[in-house]
Every structure is written in C-alpha cells, then in structure tokens.
Length: 220
Ligand code: C5P
Image (cartoon, rainbow, N blue to C red; front, side, top):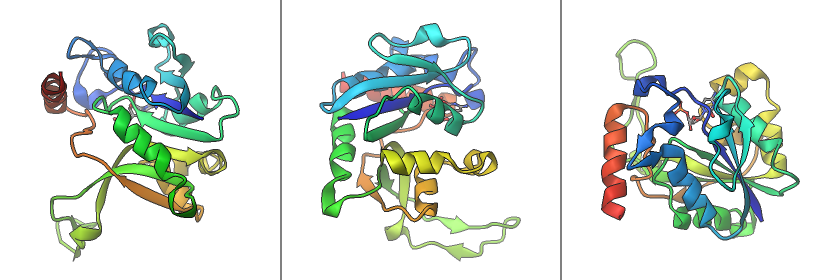
C-alpha cells in the first residue's frame, strides 16, 4: 500500500489569483479536489496527506490528512511525509495538476516494481518541441536529441528510503531542485519515466486554468 503526498501550499503568484492556487475554483470546485478525487479512486492508496498553505489547514478535503506546508515545495513534501506513517511507498503529486487520472496513478505505482524494481517512477510525456540549450544570453550552444527527451510531471512514486534520502539534501540544493526525482538521480538511484498524456497539464498561468477547465468539461 502507498501513501499519497499532495503538495498544495504554493502561493501561485503567476496565476494572479486572490488566494492559494490549489484552492482556486476550477470547473465548480477548488482545484485541489480534482486530483484528490483521482487519488482516492486509485486502488493501493491507503491515505492521502495534503500540505496546505499556513492559515488554510481547514481547507483539507474530506477524508484526507492536512498538514501545514513550508516555504519551498520540498519543505511541503517533507511536512507531508512526516504524516505518512510507515508506508514503504510514497506518491508525490502537485495539486497544480488537476487532470490526474486513477489510470495514470495506478501505472506509476505498478511501474515501481517492474524490470527488477526502481527507486522512483515518474509520470512524463514525450517532448514535442525541439529543445535548444542557450545558457548564456541568446546564443544557442546545443540542440538536444528530441527522441530522448521527456517532459516530467507528477505523480512521482518513490521507495521510502529514496525519498527520505532525497529530502535530506541541504536546503539550498532542495530549493534549486525542480522535482524530487532529480535528487534521487543525484544520489545514484534508479529512476524511470512512465508514459503519460500531455493533457496532465500543470496550471501556472490564467491560460492554463482556462485550458484545464475545458479539458475537465470534455471529460464530463
Ligand atoms: O509553484 P509551482 O506550480 O511550481 O508548485 C508546484 C506544486 O508545489 C503546487 O501544487 C504548489 O501548491 C506546491 N508547493 C507547495 N509548497 C510550496 C511551493 C509549492 O506545496 N512552498
């Protein structure tokens, strides 16, 4: 059995909303509720812990355990992990991805034990754009081989020891990490991708919010 850690404690400044992004209304309910429902409908998830912004702990969805999130995303993951009991498998999900499905969640959980076992299994979609590296100014240094590139999403599923070790990195390293799996990679862990649909979008801007509403309406 696994415990899901949903991080919902971000402020969402790029969305320009009044309150926290995870609680913004989306297709008639707070954004957070859409992915919590998908997790609750996935067999093998025994508990859902949600990290909420300070002062919003009362907004925890029914049936979930609420904790106060931290200043950085990884602090919120850590706070949620502390309420996860002794589960051997942890699934981390961003509340900012409301298009999560029980099918993708189940695929990520199952992937952890495939091919002799992995330390982490992360949802990802093949990249469709050509990606160039221009680290200094606008000068292109390199064009990456697109067929090898994946745009990584959440859910990200971890063996407990791998996630605990990842979160024990110094704060500056945690703050610079754009996902939890890259810390596992840095520790020499075995991380795999799990093919996901590109419509498991992350809501960052008002345009993303409109698109998420359209995609949810189409599903209904
Ligand atoms: O800001 P961004 O969309 O990259 O955040 C990704 C996820 O991490 C969101 O679901 C957000 O609520 C969460 N987060 C958090 N605590 C923070 C910052 C972000 O739980 N301090």
